[in-house]
Image (cartoon, rainbow over all chains, first blue to last red; front, side, top):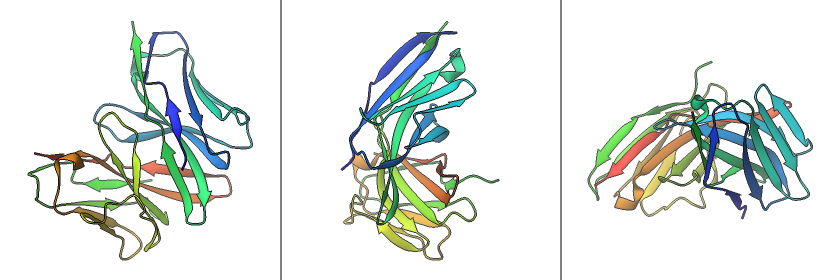
Amino acid sequence: GEDVEQSLFLSVREGDSSVINCTYTDSSSTYLYWYKQEPGAGLQLLTYIFSNMDMKQDQRLTVLLNKKDKHLSLRIADTQTGDSAIYFCAVDILTGGGNKLTFGTGTQLKVEL
Amino acid sequence: EAGVAQSPRYKIIEKRQSVAFWCNPISGHATLYWYQQILGQGPKLLIQFQNNGVVDDSQLPKDRFSAERLKGVDSTLKIQPAKLEDSAVYLCASTLVTVSGNTIYFGEGSWLTVV
């Protein structure tokens, strides 16, 4: 099955850029997502990228996809304390039974003043 | 647009008791998912419905977990009897596939503690 890996922790200073990385194994992925989870809350969809794209920008967020290396990254520009949360990479695979999401273990982002 | 609704938000039960969680997806979303998220881990798919049919339940512990979506809209997930290791957040999600993309939306989750 699909395996999605992320580093566990990232600490940055307020105002710096954050880069959260993700690697996956299944090359047949159709969509790749980034979700944000704050303490005690559900998953908030931040952005997603279709597998035939290599970059997508949405305000402070930039997603880069390297299909050859099966590597996905999320860059947050001008990181704020409100960005502190756990960020999950998720890979969507279209199977005969429909779309299935496989999640990474999550990267905890800590933003320091 | 209303989001994915789940209830109850929090539940504490003793082991061997039973519990049920309810989910109402976004209107018009044919696909509904139940995920289990254990503390410190990413969500893991338990079961996927397309309308009222089960598409994938390969990771559902069928000896104690059951789920249904009788009318193809809302769904219930039941655990009976509960074990300590079932303590987790149970996330419901729904999706609508369109020509412009496939976005999957999650509810706030039902937090289960088994003591």
